[in-house]
Image 1 (tube, rainbow, N blue to C red):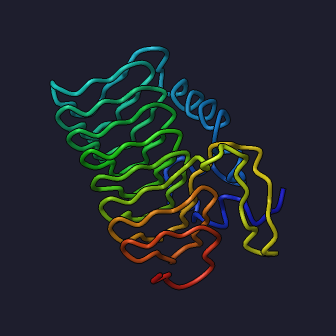
Image 2: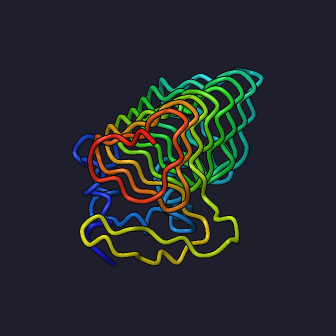
Length: 225
């Protein structure tokens, strides 16, 4: 597998909480069933088996099911639904009506916002999907921000294997995955109602403007149309 798909090329590992666990992993090692196993291992280290372990603040109307860990100072808002496996870091926010439906890692100070749905994904520290977003089988780097209504699509129309464009060679790489959303490097952004198609890669500090549909690998700058 191309070294250009190492997570270190998208995320400054020195800034995140679980540095040792993520260091030198490839993107493909952090998605699909690999991610589920990865999160279960972290949960085990925190004493989580098949029931939620809650250290933070959870609103009485929120529902948590299965192996879920809520760190100290994390906050789960009204009517949020969280299905494990899920690890939620310190000072993270799961806001009103959010839907986490399994295999999601939410780093410290990250945000899964109002009516945002997430599955099979990583929110690194300070990553934010604040409003009405869909995050499927995707990785959000440190301090990523998704504008309201952003959709990270994870399944091709005909359900075929998702391929990505190698940032170094511009050649297609087979991922072996039917479900693969997007990988956004540190401080990448999307504007409101942007759509990223399956297999999209945004390198650090790049972005997609509001209402833009983008597929491919964005190495620098912002896409306006």
